[in-house]
Image 1: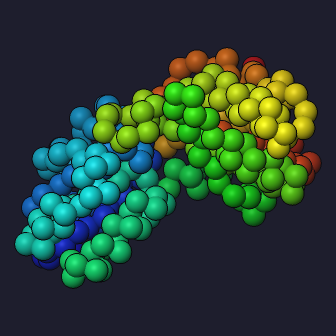
Image 2 (image 1 turned 90 degrees about the vertical axis):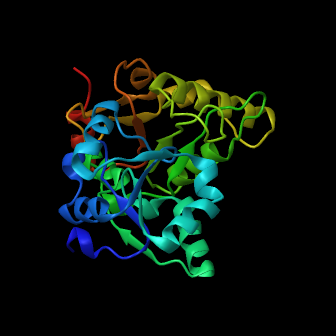
Length: 272
């Protein structure tokens, strides 16, 4: 599609995980052809060095945070009159927020198009060395908010483990839970500490047996800065992974029953 041919509407454009080198030519062409470009800044995050390159790839852009996406009246008004790009790190339709946005466009008669991007979640599964068909329900691990600590993420991990299924655990990006501020990705140490607290809380409530310390003994795979030149994949116990420093955005995989091939892949990823 030539730049001048991009019609009015909201164009949800996936820009791939972490590195603009993963952005497709179609995504670049359509983003360039839009008369307004936004980078969605709260469901995923683009490293600062790649943000600095984005203007040279597609043109000037503005950041759009949670309130403007979940209450998109102004965004849709623009998209009625001209082509508007909402650029999303990874694959845009992975987030329920963007599925809701599609529904709003359909309700209000605003043209809506999706340009897929490479998904960081599918890339993480591939890099883990585990079989994709053996993954269970995906889990997001949120920051604790004051005294509130949800235990449902740990319950879902437990359920997957009990059913012989691996778990992809996405780590929270927003300590406030509000989506107003720039992301602050959860560190491996914070993630493991949060799982331990969830285990302690579940035991207090009688919904989980065993000691909190056994969570630290679980095997895990830590994927850091997937899709960038700083990509790193490490395996070990969660206690070992919690001590790993560096990196920006992290994802955990918690395996269940591994086949011999998967065990071999797991040990190849052990920290030396």
